[in-house]
Length: 490
Ligand code: ZN
Image (cartoon, rainbow, N blue to C red; front, side, top):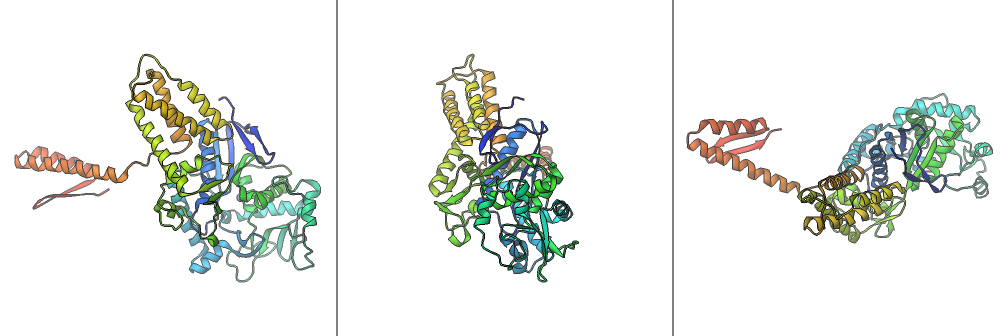
């Protein structure tokens, strides 16, 4: 395959030609959700961004192993290594087992992702299932003197690490500034420096999520799981690590330090970060009253937006912005996306009605190369979609006979739209499902009316045949005094 894909590597702050370490294999790791509540719009953006990447790499015939984790332990209510575990807190409030919370919200996350046509990753490991692997990373860090024990807890020693490696290279932070801006801890904390972070926390007596270890009964720090699980499934060096821009610091910075400190080399070749979303120009937050879960987005049952927006409208809307740009959700913008998406779907459906000619007055090749150039330019979906809409104009001209196309060009045009829109962008025609049901009602009623007429004419063979064939299709027919009843039984 011709390799022209450039991706923006956050680590080097520039676009780089994508060259996998072990082509055609590609290792992709993306930080997944902490499952203590319903997924919201903020979850949709990384999921869709890296689903697009996963789909495009697969389309380019790479063999992608996509690992997206589930955080089910160690993510504390405040991010500074203090406070209750988010899962445990929810479990306490709901009077449930932590793993009931995890299962419940993981299932709901999967349902939301399925609605958005986000493919499942190749592996979806849970942090709580990899405690031993996390302990192994801690052992290595202790051995290499990049970690220290304090009162049963283990902390990463940022200052010691900085003497050998560069802490802060991803987020642009400088260790000197961190030290200068740090308040004296004056023996109040177990940490040497406030910017050190927990690898293992000794559990307080009331802390329910705990595992025995040689250091203490406790639990792993949040950042550790991603270093341990990416190493386990993708190796000590792998191609792409993705996540939201909000995870760049401290989460990803700490991941780099852990992996480099434990294995002596950089784990990740390309770091990719999607930008954040806003709602009507404001950051989304529970305290701001503009918090929108995906479920309420799709049902319209929220106070922020005027109407329901379908999953494909949301997906299309997100893809109309470049993943590295901020994206603002507003009714006007979503309504425009809804219209645009329908126009695109209508054009694709009408491709089958175009009549081929003996020559072409349009260039499908030109449209194709522009479209792939856009994708190869760091997944520039807004430009790709603009080209696809130019193509919609072309399709409409072909439909009314203003332009001509040969049969083979027409085939290429259909393939181009189907592969880019359905396979790569991951859009799908949501159709009119109620309309489909109505149509089914009419067809079955027609068949059963025909059967009643056959019975009247004593044509038992035809009457039985209709009933038997419907039964084979899973539709049960019951004769009643006034005619018939039917129901779908499978
Ligand atoms: Zn992570």
